[in-house]
Length: 341
Image (cartoon, rainbow, N blue to C red):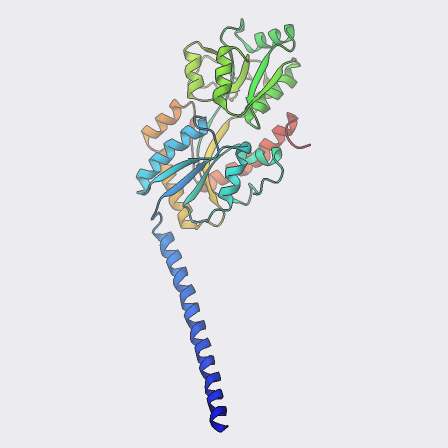
């Protein structure tokens, strides 16, 4: 009995020692993992980076995103691959990236939809103010009021007069939940014309229908549309900017064309963000790489050829810019009567 008692006491002591050693080992392991995480952040990037684009292939932000991804691959020494995930006004891809591991290896390209999409789609599953860390602003671009080239119209006032003389016969196309939709609605409200708003899921089909005459007008952007204007296949009546567009210097601004209500500089833009919680040094590395890309004369020329202006906003400036957009675009959507009531 004494032996059994002593053996039981020894067992309890052993268990205590084992538990203590196990706890020490766990603490050491956690510290080791933390050290590995810090080292991984310090060595960033050590593997492929994915840039998620919530836009259709061939859209202005898609083209610019691919350009930057290619440049980043060279500057970071790791492949930056593009993944298109359009749908639901960009909210599907945006939600997915908001829950991605915040390590800098999954990034999101955003545009003004970051600000207004939650107004259009309830319960998007992310908060544009808190779910992301801004990396850098890339570019912005004005939209053009374009019409079918066969219309007997050469100015905004001609278009208004034509629409009033032909009520219900002018169709203005727009992509759903986008700045062109806001502009189409505001054009209708401020001019008092009776026109039909025709929604499209993506710009390519809209542009094709505008060239063929199935629709008569639209607010669009991009190098492809600029080429169509220069080739005489479309007419540009105005640009939505505070000053004339360098790509089409003979086209007046909406203010000059007699639409002051649309003169609030409704340009679209694009930039890159990461999930909140991404290490500061990783954010700094990515931001510096984007800005370095945007300092390249080749990249800047390519951006301008797409009908856009270089923004080149570093992380703090881009954060301030996004904050301003988050308050600006929802107001514009409500003024246009678009979105949740």
